[in-house]
Length: 130
Ligand SMILES: [Zn+2]
Image (cartoon, rainbow, N blue to C red; front, side):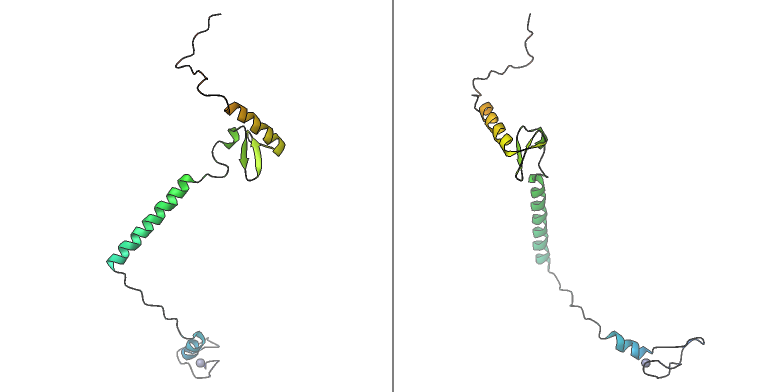
């Protein structure tokens, strides 16, 4: 059987083969192989530096994760007034700006109470005799 591209005879084929592409043509079709850059030798010192850098990066990432608040943060739905991305919430429900303003004033009043004047009982509350 002859190669269907360059018409040279290909000798080693099975009897039922109708068409063949010879090895030279296959090579020509593929083109030159890509030569990879040789692997750089890394010295012990360089390795040490890289490892330190990697560890530092990892630690930084972990620290970021620790301080990051996911979404609205923990317990946002328990707050009387909560602000997140331009929206006000009260106990997890969306409220408008006017309501938020009113709540803010209310909360300011509560916060204004002198903490030293508020007596806090210790331990169990005393029994009230009727
Ligand atoms: Zn050929």
